[in-house]
Image (tube, rainbow, N blue to C red; front, side):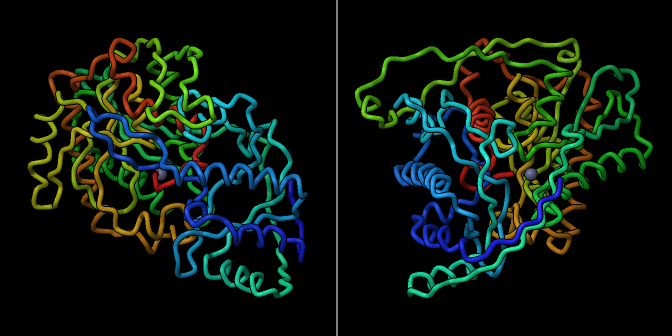
Length: 444
Ligand SMILES: [Zn+2]
């Protein structure tokens, strides 16, 4: 289906309203997941600052107000500067839950919050088209409106919805192992990207490194003991859809019961979120035969920067191996091990069900400030030498894992300990609840 529409002065209504958006809301890029690093044993912090809750409440009210007013077009300002535009998925007005506790949970992005309606849901309400302007151009219009000018703006939106095949596909290939070939090491990155640029740093960089890592192993004529399987995921930006589906089909899943109703605490009774996060619901791990044949998954999804080390995701058992495997790369700047977790990308579904899944620590370069989900995510922003370094490190980790006598050590099985309340589970739940396009801060 093709939509061609031209909009004129009626966009002024939305522009005027947006000029009054709180600064914290204007800074929030639609569509991002925090790349938060949480030490495994750290006490959980409150999920949202008062400012973030205020911004979330304002955004919710704002979209519903636009809908009621029947605006022709919504114009959002981009964060960043220099004409760059950060743009991701569309937002749609959300129904307001009648239950004050559900309202509070939504603002807190709590695990027991009702699932939000996504723009691509079949049940999504019809809503005005949305565009994003660079901050300089947006502010110019806003200043004109504030000065009393009768602002006229013309927009031509030429968008095509491809809905003949709604299935997204993972791309998977492997180097067969030898004496332990029924056991598997995986590595990967995601092929899907946002539309502002070509996705060079998010995540063609990771895809290229993963492909280069297996090419290096192949070119050297190495004979890995275990099978090495590279996966280029789809649907990562919509909630790790490709990797989650693959992990569920091949390895298992954590079946999560509906959270029990809790009595409201006094501060919740007034619609205010509780100070402490609600514990994540416990789940039951259901595994498939391949679960026992799996060793580890390595992911790269933080842009073009070189690898500085790796997040161990709370798995102390891998430290000695990782320290040894990093040693030859000290002069290339890769030396850091952290027990901490990182979330928001395709190692999470593995980690969630207790399989060793890791993401490398990378130099930020200009990922968060310039290229991540923006119109500047293009080939020119790739650092060739960093990509080569990352490929060598990834190849080494994958090959070394494939050559061990034993599979890589695992954490305790989820569903049997407090570990299931780990931050990685909360991240996954958060993505389910809110959609990548409504989470603030920068992610993957
Ligand atoms: Zn990414």
